[in-house]
Length: 187
Image (cartoon, rainbow, N blue to C red; front, side, top):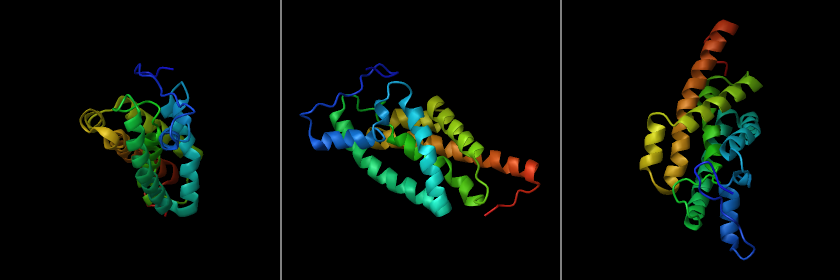
């Protein structure tokens, strides 16, 4: 199967090492990266329940800790997966970077608003992250072209998420100002 860039998704064989199988499993976002159509978008969408759970459990600290722990683990799995992959730039089956990026998208707004989180906010955050991740404006594209290896794979999505989190914060501030009559944080 080919991805959008024309590279082939890796085939895992019975004889492959457990190390390779596990690195592909985790780097692919628990196998989501092997979905033939839009694996990054599917991974981002699948991350929304995780973001909700981390937020419910620990508010912004839960999101920050979750994103940090997943980033650290993901980095090592991506390093290993890239060693086995023929495409060492950013293979489409590696989507754990989208998971981290989608979580980072919600961090800034949760630092200021913790009491009202609705489905619409998660969907707007999802759309914003996918927008910046797919179009790769400004620094996102630069990072993708200039930072190599696992760090580059992970970092371009984090930079896209930083753009998305700032825009989501602005959207929420405007929404609260116009619809709730306040810009005060709702923490």
